[in-house]
Length: 488
Image (cartoon, rainbow, N blue to C red):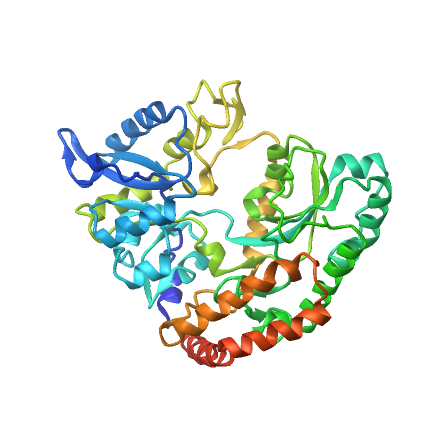
């Protein structure tokens, strides 16, 4: 029996994620040094530091010290700098305790992270037990667990999201839409009414979606067709269903339904704005349908799913926290991650802000809160990359029925056939690099509909062949066959 199965059957299924991280200042170099009143754990976190960071941590550390006899120092590295700086920190062997995972699989294989296979269920049992099995399977590297993931959107589903102000204004119906093709009539009708507003608001970097999963990410051609033979790796750009989608994109582009500069444009189409009619969005169970998206937009948005809800390796690794192999506080670090992901008082105080200023509990309604005027965008931490979403309090708008639907959707979501499969590229590094270069030349044009797929795809496939596609595919399929055999 495989390790992930053993872990799941023993009930050890809830990875904790911490989202407290430390930026690489020289004063943080001795990251594991204890203070006079106990150990201070050093963490690296991605993103922007909350404006009220000091107050948030003061409240949190009182709770942490009371529960596990330690404190946490969370330093932030900006989105654009995180990968570069963490690569330097890892390669230099800097002494730190916890970090938001960067290049998780590669760095785990290099020995940069502590093995949590036994530590997580021992020192973070409550949080670990809450994890969906997919979090464990999706984070195993050579049979070992090196991450404590945030329990959140364990599955993802691709949506077409509509700006409801325009649906109402022009009395447009989205009933029956479950694919790109289904949406064409309503896009054309809208475009006639509002030719100067982006009907399908996409730009550079957009990738058309389908029922596929990707061993090397969606920037590469390698994929498993969830509606085909799930034991075979295929070229997504050579499948009938995806070619049909690309033809639809090209048709929309020719009709003016897609912005003319989509392949090269970085134009922002704000959620809260009126510059768009339809956009592509990703949703998971803790988005409660369109609730979170609508809140973010400050206007009503409605969505239609165009792919199956899928538990994938990408989702399992969406927000991982790792313990450094250089840490002198491995057990205490895992203990903290366990507390963060199992203690509602601690986690909600970080996610919503200071209780009594940003939010308050609603009398007689367990787990329900009301947001106050003090709840502001930069005065709390983000839920997706801090901790266990299952123990977060919810606003009154999130009903018991919505929570029930959330839990059922997690239970019923499809599991990707490549969940947990990590392709070792050592023998084909040059070819993979060559293929990446080829794809970078074609991705934007094809996916935004800017080029004709019937003319362009033969050129792409010829270039892939010359770059070594067949060699990589053969090696990938060999490893995938072994993975499937081992997973039985």
